Image (cartoon, rainbow, N blue to C red; front, side, top):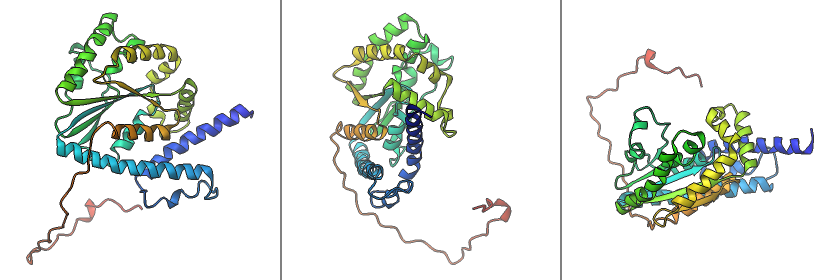
Length: 305
């Protein structure tokens, strides 16, 4: 095996390991990073282990700030929509997961709409997105958004030239209308290189837990890289408005992209820590005449573990 093949295999393995790190994030916190001290038997001073510790440390601190932001959104009645766009495998889902991981899903929810059905295709284009917009005290994260028309629909021929041009005439005013109604609109584009997308697709092909992420449309997008690039450039040029500008996240390094995006997001809202009254558990009410009934054995889930 040549050097280039060795390097490709190493990077694919690193990509797989990065995915497995996700499972650690809910089990660890900023006060218990000892499990990261060793990385596959390497010494505690190993540079990779140190990088992982630094990443988790920064992530947990910012997730704590996201909880404060959530409290402020509820307390102030703020409304915010955050759009996440980018190529397939650019890391949109990863950062969304880290933002929502420790938040209340009733306050911070994700909208990931499937392809429109026959009925939706006859509606006003923005209609199916409107029902997902936030009420007071809510944050909505769109994992892909109405910008599908400027991207996949344009490249794959799912819309006409007239529909494409009408989108560009409408979307700036649509977003201004949202802002005038009190909804903050934040738009992120996750930018990766041709080589990095190729690597991530290979990682998904070789990871049985992630093969479901590769659809025929994803594979076709790989073939049409340049078409998507042109479509993205036109989209950003025609929809970058002062009321809702685009923000580009350099996403070749997944972990840095997550941290940079969350750090930037926290800076987009003037949140402050909300004071909460001390929580005290009420005394448990007990009745002498109550006896807990045993659970019938046939109802029990077998204790295999």
